[in-house]
Image (cartoon, rainbow, N blue to C red):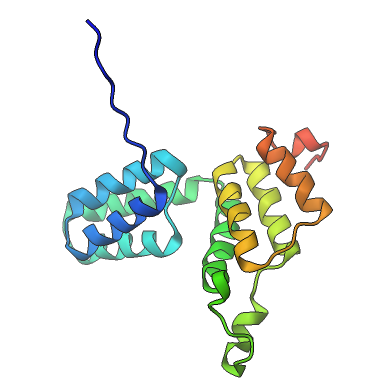
Amino acid sequence: MAGRILVQARDPAKLSMDIQNAIEERRFNDTWKFYEQHIQMENFPRKSVVSKLLTSFVESLDVQWLEKAYGLVEQAFEEAPRAYLAVELILEISYLFQDGMVDPRKKSNAPLIAMKPNNTAVNIALAGCLLFGTTRKAEQLLDMMPRVGVKFDANLLIVMAHIYSGGTGLKSMGVEL
């Protein structure tokens, strides 16, 4: 018997929105389902989404959701935490700069502009991703770079080549730790 298998492609940004909507509507079963789909697709959602998810689960005071929140925190600490956190921090800050949302002419934006990611920060975060095998986060960072005005340099191009060639880490680049 021939049968069809339907595969539904999901967009990570759409899943993040689904998570946030389910949180706001206090549909925690749906929230958890969307979260698990996101994890299967590309690992953790953005830090702000995970924060809302944890907060809502804890505020529910329901044992089931408290246990889920605890498990989620444990899971986050088991991943390559430093590389993941570095990329998440850069991505969160970058979201503020994408598409010229921050006006550099305003004095009130000076502290934020001082935090704008540069090549060095991106290179370090990407090398950490390569070292710990979190290539999906590295791809997100690479996608964000042109939108915030971070220019490509020679070091970045080398790291990008290793990420896209399926390099197994910095050891494939001859770097020993």
